[in-house]
Image (tube, rainbow, N blue to C red; front, side, top):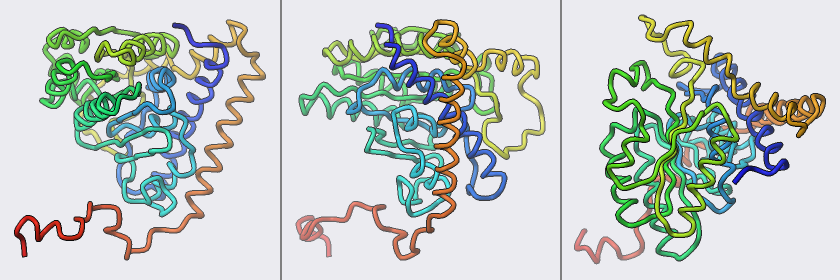
Length: 334
C-alpha cells in the first residue's frame, strides 16, 4: 500500500526533524553540552521514517545505539529527547539513559541499547506480549548489519518464526559495523538471505527511498497484524558521518569517493525533490516544513539548556525493581 499524500508530507517533516536534530546534537556535543559519545543517523533518515510511519501509535519500536531518530520518526516530542542527551531531569529517562538508551513510552518506544543486537530479543518479547494479550499491536526492531552476526539475531528470528509473532525486523544496512566493512565480516551479501533459514519472508529495499521503505514495511506490518508471523526488511543505506562523533580513526577505512557518492543520494534532498516534482508540495511549502522543523529543534535545545540536572539523591530511583513486601522472607532470605 502506498502512503497517502498527507502521510508523505508528514514523512518529509519528520525527515527534516531528524536531520536538524542530529546536526544540533553534533554541535552541542562539540560544545561539551552533550556528555559522552553520540552515534548519529545522518544518512539513515528515509529508512527510519519510512519504516516508523508504517506503524500505528500503539505499536512498539525497539532501537539500537544509533537511535535518536527512531522516537522522532514515531512522533515523539523533541524537547524531552534533547534534554535526555544533555543528561537533564526533564529528559525522557530523567537524564539516566542518555544517547544510547532512549525510551519514550508515549509513542511506543520500548527502549534502545548500546549493546549490539540486544534489542532483538526485546522486540520478540514485545511481540509475544501483544499475542498473549490478544491485541493487534506489532513490534518493530531496528538493527544494523553487524547485529545480524550476533547470536541474539538468530535466536530472535527463530523464536519469532516458531511462535508466529507479530514482529518486523528492519535492518539498517549501512555496510559498516563501526570500521569493519560488511563484505569482510558477513558471509552473505544480503542480510535478507538469512531470513530463509527461519522460514521467514524478507525484502530488500533502497534505504534512501522513504516511499519504498514505507511500502515494504507496511506489507510486513499488515502481515504481522493479521497473525501471519514475522518478516525481515533490509534497507540499504549509509551513514554520512563517523561511527561516533569525536571518534578518532587513525587509518581510513572508507573510500572518500564512496562517501561522496552516497551523499549524492542524500535522503533529505531526494524526498523533498520527489514531493515537489510530484506536485505534493510546492518549493515554498517544502521550505516552510524545513523551517518548522528547524524551529522545533531550536526550541528543544533551549529547553535542554534551561532544564535542571537530576538531584544526586535520585541516582538510583527507577533503576531497580524493588521487591514487594515479604518477597525475601518467602524465598528464605534474611
